[in-house]
Length: 193
Image (cartoon, rainbow, N blue to C red; front, side, top):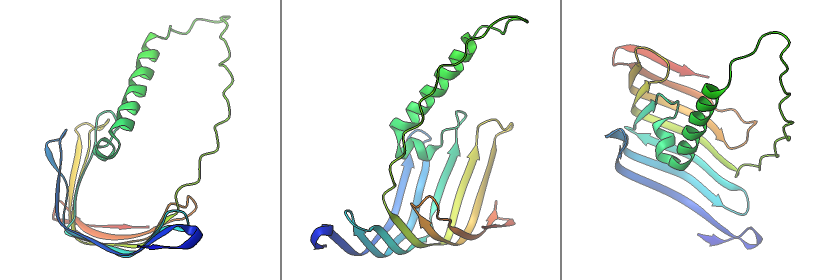
């Protein structure tokens, strides 16, 4: 950590987390596990260039990713419970309003035009962040979709390995994905793009 003049404080270094095990309280199941999470080439300058990371290495990571019947993911519930609750409430209110809406009338009925909508405010620029490479070694993912699919869909991806290059908060940036694994331990799967 050092003082960088007008740019404020700057941190250069590395960080490692070992043997992490988290549980999703609402699902009562494992959420994220990993044997090691290494951040290499970390540079953080809040008032300047933002965050840059040369490489993240995730060893034996596990993630349980569940899309609930309401379309909210367990990741949203954990990382932004207030936002997830607001999204649920807005969806419920929309559904209730549609249920109360009178049926359309026959020919000759007049419908009011909807009130004019103000143009959306320009969103603020995202905090500048760039991760050059994320490398995954011996990972696994449990994915389940409980929305409209019947029966519900679930799959496990084992032996997940590969990399994601060029992650960025820049909306114009595109990351390159090259991952391989086995769906339910048998069928090989590749995610490229």
